[in-house]
Length: 217
Image (cartoon, rainbow, N blue to C red; front, side, top):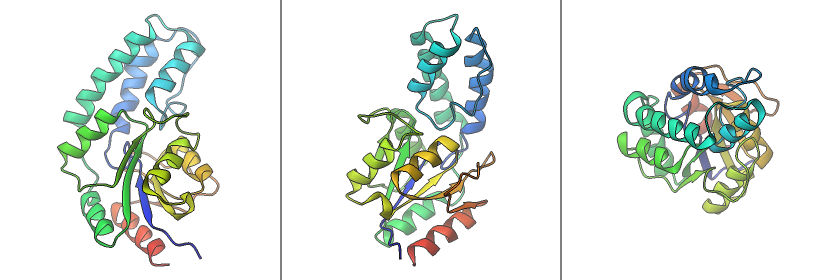
């Protein structure tokens, strides 16, 4: 029977309702600079922005340089994380509950480390044992498993001992490939039902109950 010692949370779409804002940025600010083909939001959601932007420029061409697109993206991020997003209800209480029972908590995200810190500071999230950004690891971002393998290693746990909370196909696939048990959860958009997903939690209360049920096995 599985025994879990850590819960790893994605940030965008899980801890904060940022996906709705990022979708607008992609569609109305980034994609209009691309010259050929039809990019989709799904191909970039959950992935590290630096990999996504570079691939978009390479695949579709752009009327501005990659550096310019990256600068635009950073400016949008400052506004989104410092002003627009709201914290998922009861997430801070869930963090505290997990920590009090001795379960390691980590944030594992494709976002820039500065953006993660903005969210932690702005919403005064309880201390977590690890914050791992795909931007900083030595390896590719989601949907490859490297970021979750790096987080498990930092916590000193086997990936099979980790519960991961994800919302995007890229993130879910990354966590499943790493060997974790994955719960799909999202505040503001549907969760893709990827093969191997443990379950989909529709509300913060469902999420709490599902995590507690797994931890009590």
